[in-house]
Length: 130
Image (cartoon, rainbow, N blue to C red; front, top):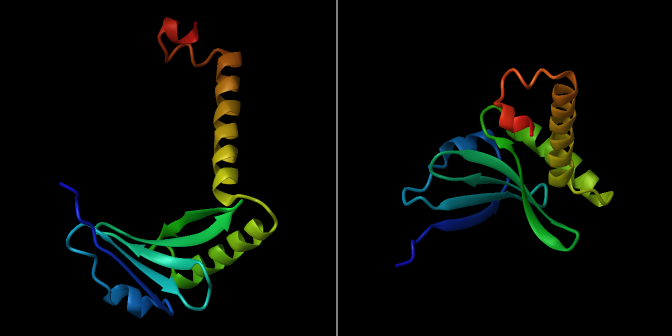
C-alpha cells in the first residue's frame, strides 16, 4: 500500500502575512508556494516546518536548495540570499556543493591538527589511532 502525500503548488507574491496564514498540511504532505517576483524562489510547508527554497537547474539537473527556515529568516532576507545564490549559479558554481566542501575541509584540517598534536589520543581508544 502506497503512502498518499499531499503536494500542492501555487505561484503568488510571498509575504509575511501570506506565510503566517497558510496552515501546514494535515496528512503529512507538502505545500509549495512559489514566488512570482523571483523565479525559482519559494516556500516549502510541511507538517513541522516552513522552509525557504530555491529551485534551479545546475549543470543540467534540477536542484532544490534549502535557503533556511521561516522565522529566523524573513521573506526579504531569504529572497536576498536566493538572488545571491542565483548569481553564483549563473557564474557556474554549485552552491550546495561549495558549502559542503568548505565545511568538510575545515573538519579535516581540525582532525589533522588533532592527530599531529596528539590531543585526540587522550579522548579516543587506542584502536582509533591505528
